[in-house]
Length: 128
Image (cartoon, rainbow, N blue to C red; front, side, top):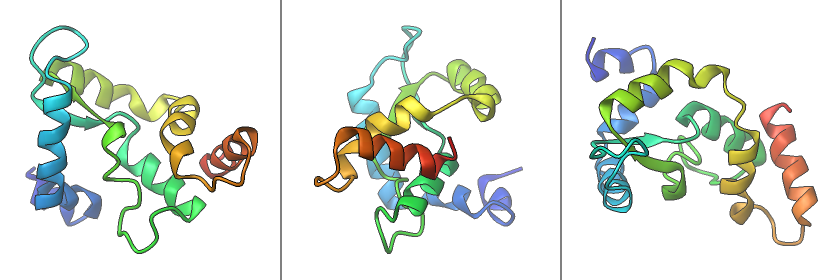
């Protein structure tokens, strides 16, 4: 099934066809030339899955006005080889993204909150 066909039932998939994503993708692949396994990175992958980070950002009120808030955070996009991407994608739904969400989103949280308050809000939005 093509990305466009999947987009009919999974609209976030269509975001990967945008010019903005292609620009971010190239930036990520320049930053992460090698996959963690040591081979050449060819896929720009959301470290924290796109659905997860957009759901948490939406719950926190971050990036208002964006259709998929948090989708374009460069620090959340890494380069992977096809094999590692497939392995990650097949297991990521069961993973706990609490630590990574706190690391990536803390810079977007209100500065008047303490680090502990920021973490608490992020984890509440994540449902933890």
